[in-house]
Image (cartoon, rainbow, N blue to C red; front, top):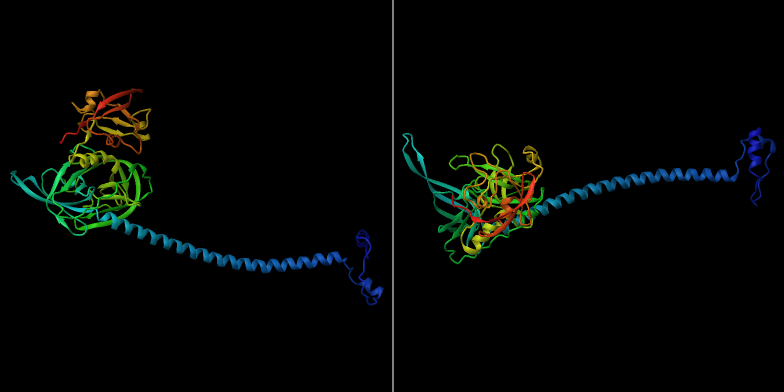
Length: 420
C-alpha cells in the first residue's frame, strides 16, 4: 500500500463490518489485491450506474414521446387548417346566400351620338350591364353613376331568383364632377314580391387585412358571382374611365383598395365584411394590374342614401371645393406643417373653389387646409366627402381651417350639388 492510499484510508475513519460471519481471507493475498473501497464508494458507483441506465432508457422514451407528440401536433395542425378552410368556406357560402338575395343585375340601354366616317353625327344604341343592391323593401336600389350614364333610355333589373323587372326608374345620379360615383334606381311595380334589403355596416371600422367579399354581375353575363379577398388599403384617390373611352374619366377619392376580384359588370355591387354587412360599393379596377380593385366606403354615401330613403329624391350636400386628402408625403411635397386634412387645390384647369358655391360665399381659398367639419376630424379614415355626407342640404357646419399656418373657423351653409 503506498503512502497516498494509506493517507486516504486513514482519513476515512475506522472500517465497519456486518454482523454476518465472513470467510477467512489470507492476509498476504489480500495485500496483493486492489484496495477495497469503503462501502460509501460502492453505493455511489451503483447509484451512478442506475442513473446512467435510467437516463438511457428515459432519453429513448422521451425521444419516442416527442416524436409521437410531434406527429400528433402536425396532424392536429393540419386538421385545424382543414377545419379553418372548411369554416371559412361555409362562412362565405352563408354570406353569399344571405346578401346575394339583395343583389340585382342591372341591364341598361341608351343612346350615344357618334360621328361616322364622313363626320355626320349618328345616334347609336348602346347596351351595358352592371350590378346594384336593394336598400329598401319598396324597391330602391343603389348602383354606380357610370352604370346608368347620361343618355340612358331604359333600365331593367333581375333578382337573384331570376325575377325580372323592366319598369325601373332612375331616381337620380351624382353629377359627373362629383367624387361620389353613385346612382339610385326604383322598381315601379313589385308585383307582390317581397324584397330583402342589405344591412349597411360602418366603413370607418374597416382595417387593412380585413376579410371582404364582392358580389356582382361579372362581365355582365355571370349573375351574382362571388369573390373574396382582403382590404389592401384605404384612402385611395384614382381617375377612372371605361375601356371603350365612351365615358369621360372621373376622379374618385377616399376609396378602399381590395384584392377581391372585381371585373366588368361588378360595378355597383356590394363589398361585404364577414358579418354580412355592406361596407363599400365596388366601383373600379386598376388596368394593367392584377387583384387591385376599388370600392367607395359606404359611410361616404350615407347622406345620399338617407336623402333618397327619406324624400325619394337625391339631394347631395355640396361645398364646392376641389381638394386632395393629405398624407405625410403630400404634406412634405406641399411644404405643409399639417399632415392630415383636405388641401384645397386647383388643377386640370379646374378652380380650387367653385364660383358661386357655398365655399366661395364662405370665403374659402386656394391652399386652405380643412382639418375638421364640426367636431369630425379629417384624417386617414374620414375624408372631407365622408364628413360632409353626415349632414343634409341646408345644414350650417363649422369648418376648422389652417390658412398660412394659422387656424381659423369658417361657417358654411351646405347647398345641393348641381346636376351637372
